[in-house]
Image 1 (cartoon, helix red, strand yellow):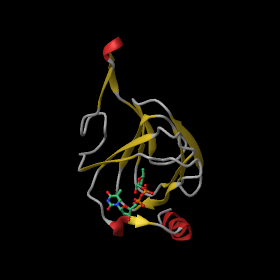
Image 2: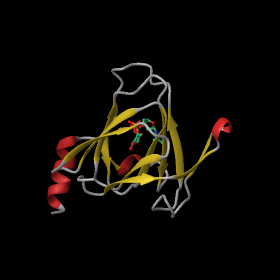
Image 3: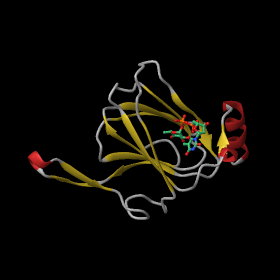
Length: 139
Ligand code: T46
Protein backbone atom coordinates (compact mmCIF):
# COMPACT_ATOMS: atom_id res chain seq x y z
CA UNK A 1 0.00 0.00 0.00
CA UNK A 2 1.25 3.50 -0.67
CA UNK A 3 0.11 5.09 2.61
CA UNK A 4 2.78 4.93 5.33
CA UNK A 5 2.24 2.47 8.22
CA UNK A 6 -0.51 0.57 6.37
CA UNK A 7 -0.67 -2.83 4.77
CA UNK A 8 -3.05 -5.57 3.73
CA UNK A 9 -3.37 -8.52 6.14
CA UNK A 10 -4.59 -11.84 4.75
CA UNK A 11 -5.96 -14.35 7.24
CA UNK A 12 -5.85 -18.08 6.83
CA UNK A 13 -9.28 -19.58 6.24
CA UNK A 14 -10.87 -22.94 5.72
CA UNK A 15 -13.68 -23.22 3.20
CA UNK A 16 -15.80 -26.04 4.58
CA UNK A 17 -18.34 -25.93 1.76
CA UNK A 18 -21.91 -26.29 3.00
CA UNK A 19 -20.56 -26.08 6.57
CA UNK A 20 -19.28 -22.52 6.03
CA UNK A 21 -15.89 -20.85 6.39
CA UNK A 22 -13.53 -20.67 9.35
CA UNK A 23 -11.22 -17.64 9.46
CA UNK A 24 -8.39 -17.31 11.98
CA UNK A 25 -6.52 -14.28 13.38
CA UNK A 26 -3.75 -14.87 15.93
CA UNK A 27 -2.18 -12.27 18.19
CA UNK A 28 1.41 -11.34 17.25
CA UNK A 29 1.24 -13.67 14.24
CA UNK A 30 -0.93 -12.60 11.29
CA UNK A 31 -1.91 -9.64 13.47
CA UNK A 32 1.41 -7.81 14.02
CA UNK A 33 0.85 -6.86 17.68
CA UNK A 34 -0.54 -8.26 20.94
CA UNK A 35 -4.32 -7.81 20.78
CA UNK A 36 -5.64 -5.95 23.86
CA UNK A 37 -9.08 -4.95 22.57
CA UNK A 38 -11.67 -6.23 20.12
CA UNK A 39 -14.69 -4.26 19.00
CA UNK A 40 -17.19 -4.40 16.20
CA UNK A 41 -19.46 -1.97 14.40
CA UNK A 42 -22.79 -2.99 12.84
CA UNK A 43 -26.25 -1.57 12.16
CA UNK A 44 -24.94 0.83 9.50
CA UNK A 45 -28.34 1.51 8.02
CA UNK A 46 -27.68 4.78 6.24
CA UNK A 47 -25.67 5.12 3.04
CA UNK A 48 -24.65 8.53 4.43
CA UNK A 49 -23.01 7.05 7.54
CA UNK A 50 -19.41 8.11 8.13
CA UNK A 51 -17.10 6.85 10.90
CA UNK A 52 -13.51 7.50 11.86
CA UNK A 53 -12.29 10.96 10.77
CA UNK A 54 -9.36 10.76 13.17
CA UNK A 55 -5.87 9.33 13.65
CA UNK A 56 -4.26 7.65 16.62
CA UNK A 57 -0.97 8.76 18.17
CA UNK A 58 0.21 5.26 19.17
CA UNK A 59 -2.59 2.76 18.63
CA UNK A 60 -2.22 0.07 15.97
CA UNK A 61 -5.29 -1.66 14.58
CA UNK A 62 -6.36 -4.21 12.00
CA UNK A 63 -9.78 -3.70 10.44
CA UNK A 64 -11.83 -6.45 8.84
CA UNK A 65 -15.17 -6.35 7.10
CA UNK A 66 -16.59 -9.68 8.21
CA UNK A 67 -19.90 -9.13 6.42
CA UNK A 68 -20.91 -6.85 3.56
CA UNK A 69 -18.53 -4.11 2.46
CA UNK A 70 -17.28 -0.61 3.18
CA UNK A 71 -14.68 1.80 1.92
CA UNK A 72 -11.69 2.82 4.03
CA UNK A 73 -9.92 6.05 3.19
CA UNK A 74 -6.34 6.34 4.48
CA UNK A 75 -4.19 9.44 4.65
CA UNK A 76 -0.63 9.73 6.04
CA UNK A 77 -0.51 13.49 5.56
CA UNK A 78 1.15 13.13 2.16
CA UNK A 79 -0.45 10.22 0.33
CA UNK A 80 -4.09 9.13 0.27
CA UNK A 81 -5.59 5.81 -0.65
CA UNK A 82 -9.04 4.21 -0.75
CA UNK A 83 -9.46 0.52 -0.02
CA UNK A 84 -12.64 -1.49 -0.50
CA UNK A 85 -13.03 -4.08 2.24
CA UNK A 86 -15.38 -6.78 1.05
CA UNK A 87 -13.76 -10.12 1.94
CA UNK A 88 -13.88 -11.38 5.56
CA UNK A 89 -10.31 -12.72 5.48
CA UNK A 90 -8.77 -9.53 4.03
CA UNK A 91 -7.93 -6.84 6.57
CA UNK A 92 -6.03 -3.59 6.67
CA UNK A 93 -3.31 -2.96 9.23
CA UNK A 94 -3.18 0.69 10.28
CA UNK A 95 -0.24 1.83 12.34
CA UNK A 96 -0.13 5.09 14.25
CA UNK A 97 -0.58 8.54 12.68
CA UNK A 98 -2.87 7.49 9.86
CA UNK A 99 -5.97 9.63 9.31
CA UNK A 100 -8.79 7.22 8.50
CA UNK A 101 -12.38 7.59 7.42
CA UNK A 102 -14.93 4.88 6.72
CA UNK A 103 -17.94 5.26 4.46
CA UNK A 104 -20.06 3.59 1.72
CA UNK A 105 -21.20 0.88 4.12
CA UNK A 106 -23.47 -1.83 2.76
CA UNK A 107 -26.56 -2.21 5.01
CA UNK A 108 -25.33 -5.63 6.17
CA UNK A 109 -21.79 -4.40 6.90
CA UNK A 110 -20.07 -5.64 10.06
CA UNK A 111 -16.62 -4.22 10.86
CA UNK A 112 -14.37 -6.13 13.23
CA UNK A 113 -11.40 -4.30 14.74
CA UNK A 114 -8.43 -5.78 16.59
CA UNK A 115 -6.50 -3.15 18.53
CA UNK A 116 -3.11 -3.02 20.24
CA UNK A 117 -4.34 -1.13 23.31
CA UNK A 118 -7.33 -0.30 25.47
CA UNK A 119 -9.54 2.67 24.60
CA UNK A 120 -7.79 5.95 25.49
CA UNK A 121 -9.35 9.18 24.32
CA UNK A 122 -6.00 11.00 24.73
CA UNK A 123 -4.56 8.81 21.96
CA UNK A 124 -6.98 10.33 19.41
CA UNK A 125 -6.17 13.20 17.03
CA UNK A 126 -9.62 14.38 16.01
CA UNK A 127 -8.66 17.62 14.27
CA UNK A 128 -7.21 17.29 10.75
CA UNK A 129 -5.06 20.45 11.09
CA UNK A 130 -3.50 19.05 14.30
CA UNK A 131 -2.84 15.79 12.46
CA UNK A 132 -1.02 17.56 9.61
CA UNK A 133 1.04 19.63 12.10
CA UNK A 134 1.99 16.46 13.97
CA UNK A 135 3.10 14.49 10.89
CA UNK A 136 5.03 17.49 9.56
CA UNK A 137 6.88 17.80 12.91
CA UNK A 138 7.88 14.11 12.69
CA UNK A 139 9.64 14.63 9.30
C1 T46 B 1 -11.62 2.90 13.69
C2 T46 B 1 -13.05 2.56 13.61
C3 T46 B 1 -13.35 1.31 12.87
C4 T46 B 1 -15.17 3.55 23.59
O1 T46 B 1 -15.63 3.92 24.69
N1 T46 B 1 -14.38 2.46 23.52
C5 T46 B 1 -13.85 2.01 22.35
O2 T46 B 1 -13.13 0.99 22.34
C6 T46 B 1 -14.14 2.73 21.15
C7 T46 B 1 -13.58 2.28 19.79
C8 T46 B 1 -14.96 3.82 21.22
N2 T46 B 1 -15.46 4.23 22.43
C9 T46 B 1 -16.34 5.42 22.47
C10 T46 B 1 -15.59 6.72 22.26
C11 T46 B 1 -16.58 7.58 21.52
O3 T46 B 1 -17.38 8.30 22.46
O4 T46 B 1 -17.31 5.33 21.41
C12 T46 B 1 -17.48 6.59 20.78
C13 T46 B 1 -17.16 6.51 19.29
O5 T46 B 1 -15.80 6.13 19.16
P1 T46 B 1 -14.91 6.45 17.89
O6 T46 B 1 -14.94 7.89 17.56
O7 T46 B 1 -13.59 5.82 18.12
O8 T46 B 1 -15.71 5.63 16.75
P2 T46 B 1 -15.38 5.36 15.24
O9 T46 B 1 -16.23 4.22 14.81
O10 T46 B 1 -15.51 6.60 14.46
O11 T46 B 1 -13.84 4.87 15.17
C14 T46 B 1 -13.45 3.63 15.72
C15 T46 B 1 -11.94 3.69 15.98
O12 T46 B 1 -11.61 4.72 16.88
C16 T46 B 1 -11.22 3.90 14.69
O13 T46 B 1 -9.84 4.00 14.88
O14 T46 B 1 -10.83 2.49 12.87
O15 T46 B 1 -13.71 2.55 14.86
